[in-house]
Length: 47
Image (cartoon, rainbow, N blue to C red; front, side, top):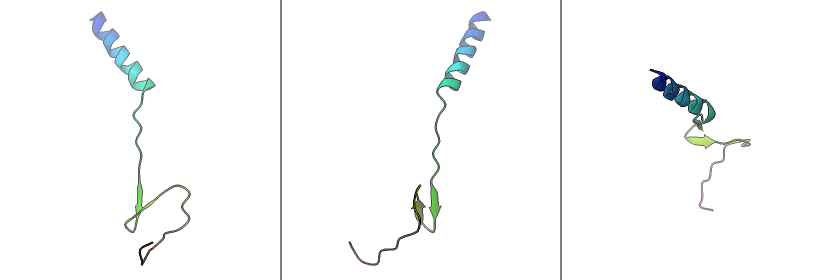
């Protein structure tokens, strides 16, 4: 029982130290919006 408690405690400590990062993307009218963007660009011709 003592070993089980130690393993459970170690797993909890690792979960607190290394949390998984989730990144969300924002899509507006079919285009991804990024940080610092001030408007939406539409290109009608090749650049």
